[in-house]
Image (cartoon, rainbow, N blue to C red):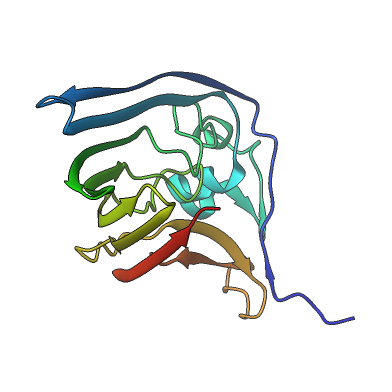
Length: 208
């Protein structure tokens, strides 16, 4: 068996309160040649009960350690370890998109269509300490093409055309392949999922 050098874990942190709202809709414009589409999600998530020993060390340092072990029974350490009020990791507060569609008959059974979408996602944290985060992301997608009454559809598209570089994901992990620090603590690192670069292409479809 090969030794695992990178590890992460999940922990039951206590209680989390989640409140939110989701709205979506579509609005026809200019005799239905244009359609405005939108959606928005607000998610207010907060930790209501929870203790994370590493949080005490981040705030108070070695005063919360006995030797190389974290000791929350030391003065002030259990209070410092509280993560009440923090946001759960990997959860964005705001997500939304707005898009504009254009459709127009061009004759002989053919129609032209095009659209633009702006997609927004607010930052999310890598861990319960709420220190490292992805940053906010805004991506723009484009499409245009033609379709006919016989089932043909040709679409030219562009995804992330402005080249947004905000990570799609971020996660803290324990890097067991690196020697421990002088304090005996395992080294932490971050795994980052980069976004896709700007992408362009053409799709041809035929329905039967």
